[in-house]
Image 1 (cartoon, rainbow, N blue to C red):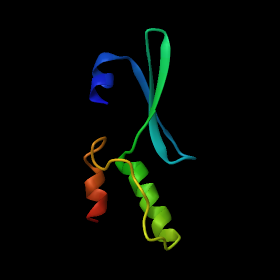
Image 2: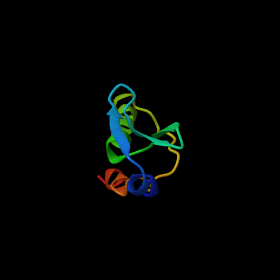
Image 3: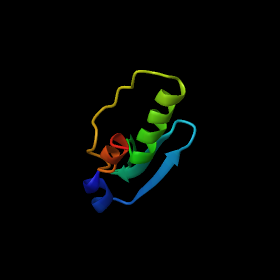
Image 4: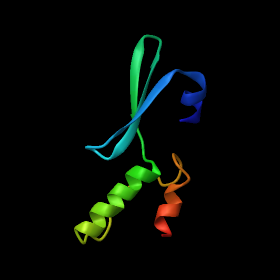
Length: 75
């Protein structure tokens, strides 16, 4: 992700309906969209777990995109 942010012009946004951030950038006339986890999206998932008395949820990879995700686990 850092490579993209340092080598391309990009637009980053948070989809409130889906509860996840994304960014888009262009390279060689191709448009790319990347959906990723952040502390905000992770906390939204934890909120759904708590509100519905679920045992948990599955995540792709924890902590690589946003180191603050680990802070949400220890609260």
